[in-house]
Length: 251
Image (tube, rainbow, N blue to C red):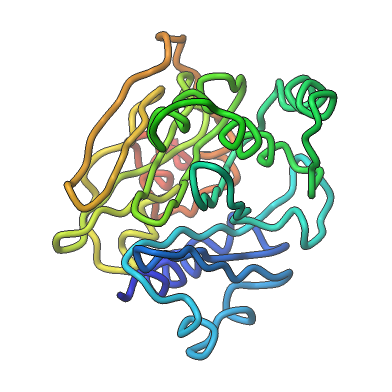
């Protein structure tokens, strides 16, 4: 039941990745709840706010806007309810075919609430005719082109996705009998979790009560790590793309 607290602490360690807005979504197995505001992690979350986010699954995000304005409607996680149930999303990267997908969706009747590229993923999910949550997620993310490390939450799933080029980092960790995914290993360090491995490029990790399953729905692509992670975004004490940021910077 401490998931939202751990997500908050993880965001605290990752505050350097974005200072515009922050948010956490959590699920207690029946309902996903969300708190997101403009500002810094420490100013948004306190004991009372975290008490509004019960449950054993949580995702969180700090935003540094690259696509979409700096305003509350673009803050993440973005949470929707649709035919497949509730789903929340956090995204690091840039979806280069977002405008193309968005134009197609708008012409087909979709109503967008934000101007961030992340929202298109939720529309693709909501429109999917797939029979299960997992299939609908896979069908949605495989239509994307660009850089996307994603953390998604449903009432009973935590899902992690990394684009097939592996542009942006995504690490998998273990805390007691729980799984953790995050952009940088410094978040694992702060909550006392152990780094297991990186989520592989093109991998979709499905985490639920039955444990962790790995899917590889993307066709193989050339690997292309974003150099800015080592030069600019990441904290020196993190491991990114399997290498110490501090050592890479020193070199």
